[in-house]
Image (cartoon, rainbow, N blue to C red; front, side, top):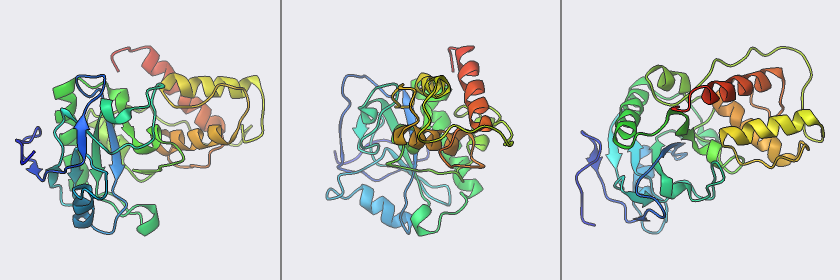
Length: 255
């Protein structure tokens, strides 16, 4: 593929060779947001277009708001890696991947500039419009690959996206002293927690035992929906926020 017209108006095109056909689907029904986790946006863009890297994304959003498309939305970019959502393990085939330039946790994680987030919102809005993607299926890389990935991280302004009609949130419940579910616990309350996480889409076994994987998934949930404290322990705030999220989505099947 020597070139293509961008799906998103105004996007630059830099073709990545790292793509293939979508499998078992005609188009995407999910957006996965990442951060690049590299020192510079230029380095990230080059890496995503390097055949040796064997990774790519559909889009890259630079800190100044420039949007670069590297893979057509009709094709399968290699961005999600080992991941799952609602039990579907080929996330690459059903998603559009957006890399957002940020050095990430290991290189001086910082706030995302407003002009960058404005560009992300506009890009997501365009993708949602083209593919009728439900709000609840605008996700973090950490949602679909908990533990293995933590991006775009707790500094990513999900509230700004939600206020602009992109993605889905509920107000997080306040953090208060009280009982906490944690690793090693085994109870009906743990089973209920796991069931709610799975009902929203997270990959967690419903066993009634608060194992390491449950801790990892709870941390992923917190990183997206209760960002003030990400510790993998299910305190009252985490549980109430999850309850509100599941109930609100269940009340509106279009989300």
